[in-house]
Length: 260
Image (tube, rainbow, N blue to C red):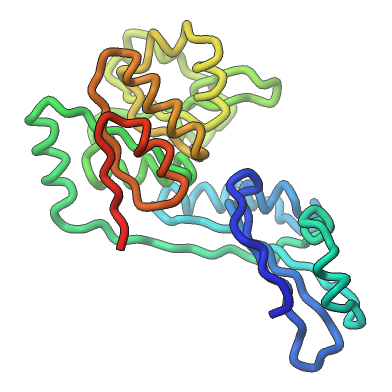
C-alpha cells in the first residue's frame, strides 16, 4: 500500500494506491456510492444496465458500493504519489465492479418501532445510503408502511422536483402526491429533492408530515432535517452510529450515539 485515500463526505469516495507484487505497475482503487463511482468513471466502462441493476439491488435492501480502478506507471515514486492531488488520482477511472452488503436487522427492531408508535413517537429514516435501500429497510422495520405505496421525490434532468412510484417500471412517469388517490401514500426524498424543498419551502410545508425516508443525506442535510422538524414544534430525538451523524446528534433535543 503506497497511499490511502480516506473517506471524504463531499466526494463520497475512499480508496487506496498499491504497487503490484511484480512491482511493474501501480494501481488506484476507489470505492464509493454507486452513483458517484458511475459519475467519475469513464463512460465507456459503465454498462448500459448499470442504473437498473444497482437500483434493483438497492430495492432489495443491499448497501451497494461501486469500485473503479486505473493504472499508473510502475516507475512512479512515492514522492510523486504524495504530490498527486485527489482529483488527479480519481481522474480517468474505469468501473470494475460492485460491492454488495446486507446488514441483517435485529429480530426485535420492528417491535421496537411499533412500541414507539404506540407512544405517539413518529420515526423516520435519515440515511447517507441510497433512498431505495432506505425504503426497503424502512419496510422491514415498519417505519415505512407495507400496505401503502411510498412515493419518491427526486430531481429531473432539468433540476425540477418530480414524484415517481419507485415500483413502477416506467421511471419517467410522474405522479401527483396531492391527488386524493395518493393521500395514503408515504413519501421518500433524495438529497437533491430535500434541498430544493427546504430552499423553496411551500411544497415542504404541504407534505412534511408524510416524509419517512431521507436518502443520501450528508452531515449538513441531517442537521437540516433535525432543525426543520424542530421548527414544526416537535421534540426531536436522533440516534446514529457514524461520524456523519454527529452534527444531527448535537442538533437534536436528544441524541443517542450507537457506537462501540
